[in-house]
Length: 201
Image (tube, rainbow, N blue to C red; front, side):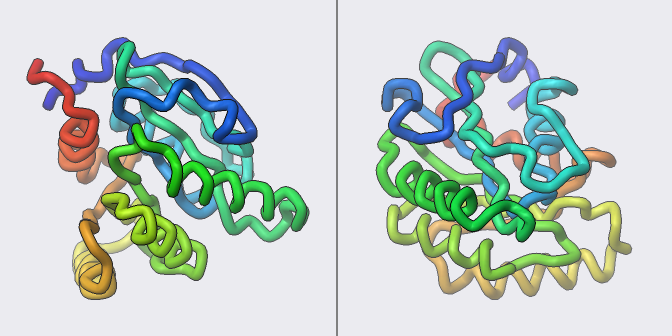
């Protein structure tokens, strides 16, 4: 799939609760990950749109479910970053409840892109997300982000370790990814296009 698949993607809606989401029809792919794992940067790089999703060095910036329209029938969704300790407990609890409700109840959701920093993968929060997706029988594709921060050997070892861990989960896969260097962008894009059932360009 070429980047032209996302040539017309645009911001659609930002809501604090999945009950305020767009109509549950068509196809959606969501992006989730621990705060500061690089979700917004990955969204921008994969779509080829530098400013589609707002990036920030401050963890916990994304506090809503942010919907982007690929076309009239397909959407990308930026979920709230999770696991940031400085966020008040009440807010973190709301985020968790909103994400669980979305992941387990959204019929149009076809797959989840789960981002983990390659230097700190498989946190308790990552495992919780994987468990929610297993409960919903939701396919998951893991991006080990910031792969440019490690040498090839350590990065590959981490990839293999995460692959072994994911063997216990249904319908999961994993790859190395770097928004900065473009590592793994085409592989991630192809997975998303397949889930969205994008027509060939």
